[in-house]
Length: 314
Image 1 (cartoon, rainbow, N blue to C red):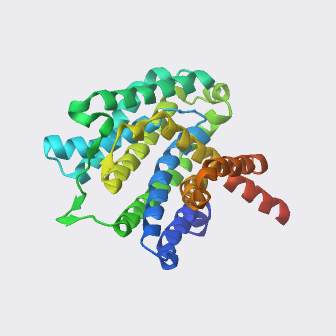
Image 2: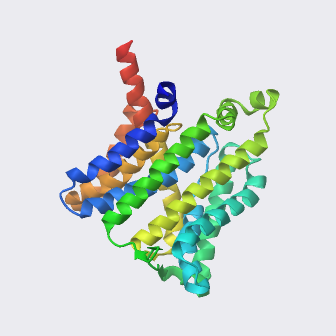
């Protein structure tokens, strides 16, 4: 049991403790909203980190799956009368199916060719959501029906804080178990060298496609939560800048670090809120701080800090 906690579940337990303790330090309900946003984006970043940090596959269009999940909780209830909670699973299933169909051809590409191909996918989803106004409301978007669970309508940032936090902990557990499984070790071998992985008998194409599908489903659930939480959704949720934001969160927190996914999401969600006091200099300061992080913590925040502490211990 001790070995299991140390190697696999300890990060998830730490995150669960953080989720439970943080509300005791919140001076107002506004901080519940910020916390919920951090957890929602961290869920999407965990999935993307599995793809980029462990499998070594770059995706610049991952917000496309965020958009599929977001619009599933609008189209399902409005046009088909489905409950919102069911549409979260429907959106994840649709995203997984789309990732399977799209991933088979584009995951044969490598490097910047793969990045451009995924970028094209994300742009395509955003264009479809913008142009299909009859289903999506066009550029103005649509209002999202409230999430109802057993006749209980989810209202308020505090409720979403606990829902998003619990889901993030579950996502952490699944990701950590996956990384300790034979599939996870195969993905790490692929990240180091696809040729060596092939020599070892690993079905590289299948493993890459599997993690792409899983990553898409993580993003879809996060997109559904974001739409339900905000109560309104527009095609911007699947835009290019959103995809870049997700990639920045992965790199900033630390590629290959599940805990780094939460840290990267927290930094890029909280920092803009904290820098609003500087008004017109807000964006400039945000860019400067991110540059400083990347210059001095080149491996990302969590891996760099962990390496520093390990070096001091030695």
